[in-house]
Length: 257
Image (cartoon, rainbow, N blue to C red; front, side, top):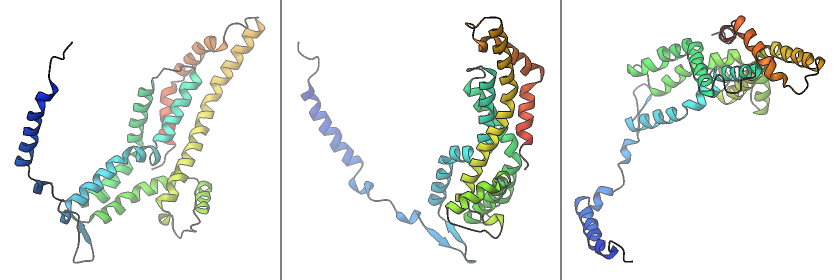
């Protein structure tokens, strides 16, 4: 069976399109871009001003790093781990769903980090937008509140460990601790704190599981899963003590900003 179209018939049309393309868009239009847009201009007071292209490149780089910054430099890590442990303790694998836990963690992070974000904006970004300071000064001033927050939540033991690993220090003041040392120490402290809170929350639910399992064994109902029987009792306990409110309050009060 012959094809319904002939491939050779398209060759003249393709050649014509290629010719028209080079006529409408000559080779000179594909010349190398003007590198003058990537410039750094020195100021009168020793400051340096960056071109709009460099500022846009810096801004896009920061945007691409926002997920990592959210996970590693805010309260999100502690919150999401505690919420996941609570879901595991209640015995409900799919309730609340992961999307609900992540959304709750994000809004709790915004609530806890609001004073830090406001100070970062007022000290760094707003003066930069008003052309009062340069980009370098803006980044330095904006990172200072975040540095203070992370340092306040980091255990001295973890900070000392990473300082020794990096073969740096001792530092004269807390502000001298670089982010390369502070970030891993902060994340390590957050993980330890999150699992400590999760352990304390897990204990009451574990006791209920043990009691239910003992009762079922004493009644000879060993074929019945204790998790199925204990789940309603764990949910009833969690609702009666207003568990979600207590957990959210505990997480919020565990930070001092």
